[in-house]
Figure (cartoon, chains in turn green, brown):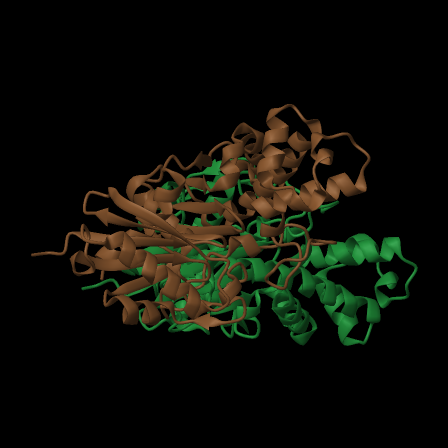
Length: 320
Length: 320
């Protein structure tokens, strides 16, 4: 009999989320392992595999799982390794042979790709990009990830690393220092950490009033900025306006590259809703060539945040 | 008997170049029609078709030509029309049904694509990109064109207009006004006209010595700047250094998109050789993520300038 399940894993800067998925795309069970407390890749992978075994338990035993698909920052589909992922403490300057290490521990075939590529497959299969052949997935989390779909296929490029749009240059002069070693990367502005950075900069460089001044600057998160904006805080609103503008300008360049039907947004920052959506669309259109103005859809993912990445990654599992 | 020839046409801002090509990729005969003196699309297409008939003559009669492939700015493969091409005087704000109009006049099937896409096909078939599955073609002429090849296919995008990298934004603040209606486009800096613009700006804004001061500023061309640089003129050398830096920075972002094996350069500005090649490679690597530094080839086309675009466009003719 065919094995009835696959397992999808989404490895992020803070946690790894994973779930057992059936052939109809239902996430039957899911769990989380922290990904930022381990001092080595081996330690993380041991924790993760222990978590998977516990989740599988008696109901979904490993011998009923056809394959495991993993989405991770800098996950390379061709090599099966995570290579120098700046947002993962245990893979910053290292090449982690994730596929090999997981297969040794679990005895189930494993496939790896970029976390944003996995999310793109999830949207194409179950989400707002269903039926689309050309779209760009942008994940706005701790960092900014991207998955580019052209003619129905995820673009891997010559070496498997295509689609690092979070590390295109948004601010050339005096741009912020990025974890990747460059300056001015989109990710330093348009991620959850980027929003917090913008808040700290504005609080430091201006005397403007804001409820954000009531908290220690170093502890401010994008969620604090969102809450302040929802309470009507003008500075907090402008932080999202600024973030949206940076994203919109960058999107205009992405459109000039692959002329997608839509750009699909996913991740924590999309919770800001119109606060970020309106400036994105406005500044994207201002920076598009006339032939594209008003014609490129910008869509928020409608999949449950945890499900999208798990479902996308799990789709790789069926191919194993 | 199979018809033994195809015809390839490269329409640029100044001239249209075309040639009869045989099955081995030899350009058997070629000719040129000016493309900037006509007041309407109809007038240009009449001139072009007259030129083609004269070239075909008795040796290569039109009934021996299987198909005609055309590369033109904003040429759309899906619709067969040139749509609002800012560098063509007779198509600035117009949609020109080129395929239909040429077929009516010549009685031979016609296919159209972007001029840079055609050049990319030419490089892939006959040039330095032979055997490559992932590369980006950049044409540095009156404007900056691009053809993106992923997994061996030219990227057309959702609407047929993908690959407008000359209109990605290189300079966000106080960027130059572009013919496309935006500001700061790569093309306003890194084309032949962009080099001349840089020269005029530097001569106007500084008191620095340069042989370029001996000529009327409005008449300076990129060729004048090149000649001055070859004579050791420091200002002229810096103009190419600046142009190369702008290109290199832009290329780094293109690599983050599709992770190509190589970027292939073609067109007038490549005649500047190391004057432009060195700053391109230096600034591309400075702006690449560490994993790509030193690994992306930058290649000059080795095809004869006129042949590359004609051969590329002609390849479409075989498919008709």
